[in-house]
Amino acid sequence: MRKPDATPDMALARRAEAAGLNASAPPQQASVEGWLIRLSPGKAKRSRCVNALAQGSLPLDDLLARCQASFDHAGLPLIVRLTPFSQPLDLDARLAAKGWPAFDAADVMVLADLQAFGQATVLPAGQRLLAVDAPTYAAAVGALRGSSARAIEAHAERLAASPVPYQGFFLQQVAEQADPRTEQPAALLACGQIAQEGPIAGLYDIFTPPEGRGQGHAKNLCAALLAQARRQGASEAYLQVGSDNLTAQRVYERLGFVFAYRYHYRSPHGVVD
Image (cartoon, rainbow, N blue to C red; front, side, top):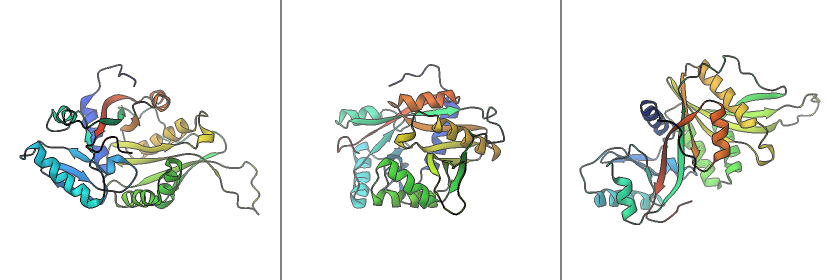
């Protein structure tokens, strides 16, 4: 895992965490003693986990038991997401002491100023940014992730019901000399989503098909999405990336993103896929 190089801006980190919670809210969620329970059957763990946002008045084992009952009822394994902001502050250590393993560490990266991204979206010749509806977007992301039909349906449902307006896009390659008599589908180079809440915008689900990786498509897409967010009034941005995904981290660093904080998951069921 890459180590952060500088002291992170924790005020921006907190804004990114709050915005990220709103952006990933599924319809199936509830609160238990200030802990946010999410019960979507989708692929993303952030939509099917516990976020421990408050200390609560119950003993830890009682809180966990109530959460476990809700996850059992939903047919999902109990997963707790641990961040620097989780409550109580020693929650991670206490779950580790119970033998719950840590897995799927991710880094939140932030960009404090979008001034570098011009008002006009500049893409290489033959490339275009196309807005797509939530079911189309979820199907494309699901195919790239290898998601089940149930997970794809849950992803589309979450996007449609999100309190943060959905904005999903394809970066496509258009044939230079298309024959108007034949409807040739444009090639998908990358896909991504903006989740914008006022002045802060999150980039989500940045994927490039395997055959197109290493060609700069993800960087072109992200730059176009950040320019779009700036036109819509955003002044800062955030994203989440696997702590071991150094290739993607380097792409985001070239765009100006820096490390803010790291989170991971724990579960009494072991490492959960």
